[in-house]
Image 1 (spheres, rainbow, N blue to C red):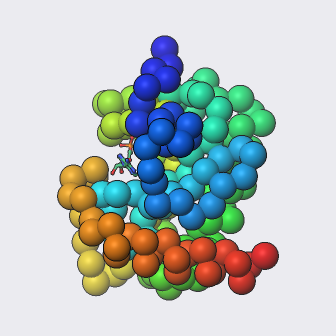
Image 2: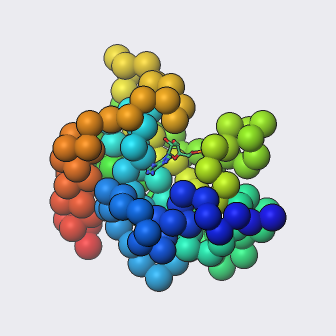
Length: 141
Ligand code: AMP
């Protein structure tokens, strides 16, 4: 059962703010406010689905294309040693927000990942990171 009052639904409706990096007809991408590493980004399909099982094929295809495009921009902006893309379904799998989304998490060989959804990052720093990703996206287009 989809909860239309989950926090990402509110962000999609513009009821609460986010540090936006990208949006199109199918998805929005913004900085994770509790990033596990510098550059941690979320891609959120607009379609209301709690888990990937309810997402239409069309929305899933669009979301993965947006995720790939943004992963390329994050890699360009942060030059990490690696990059993880994850998507959690259900609390037992670690999902904390019940609207399907993809994590783009840069990985740095010399820095361990921070905890999942644990510590809020400084907003100004997140905005600086967003600007770096937006600049990389603009160069891609
Ligand atoms: P998951 O646990 O896969 O559902 O991931 C939810 C993610 O959303 C976590 O990494 C949180 O840090 C992040 N998060 C929670 N609230 C917000 C918010 N208001 N803006 C941006 N990211 C958020």
